[in-house]
Length: 259
Image (cartoon, rainbow, N blue to C red; front, side, top):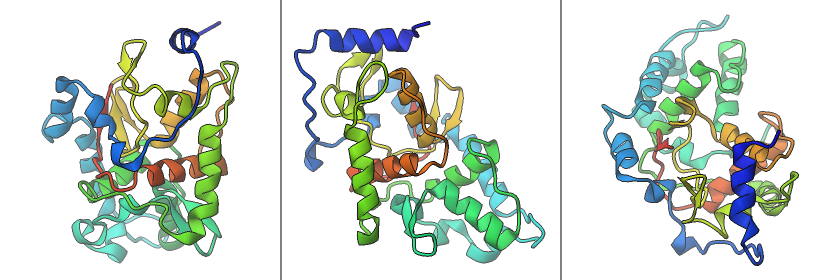
């Protein structure tokens, strides 16, 4: 059965004379916040009405909670997150020398759990992992994104860029066709943004919960009727790294609010 998203995507592009991908110049790049209506902006701007802040508060509690057979808390190693985690999320995904590849913030949290707390890694999209990621990323709010600056990460940035430009699925569309070529238009009533990942994990009204960038990427892949990559796959990590490097210089907003 063809979903309403697939129909909407097909309708949007049916009248397009050509799909010529052209990357957005750095000085023209805008956060998704710039495409939101006044009500959504107001919800994000006010911490007392931003539903993502509930996850940040949960993450703050988890930061101080001892866990695992080592009976250690994040705070036992890192202290006060307001200082130790300030700006950290703006660098992720970051290259891990020991692993020889980049890791996302979610993966870094789970590596710390396994290696230092001797605790079971948290499942992707679980409330605890989203809460910890949101709490850490919230400490970078207002910090310019710098992900992808490490020369060791460059091959992975290029891999992510190739995936961003690659057509896929039964609709034969690439990420760039929407987010480079057709931003500022609308798809099924929702604004098409430039896809700048400035506020993840973010609260999506459609989901009625917080979600990761990987969840959003998988949703887009399903929307063009492609097989979505698994959570934590090298492809999704490379895509996330490219998107964050593409947003370099834009300020972090976590937790952002989107439709």
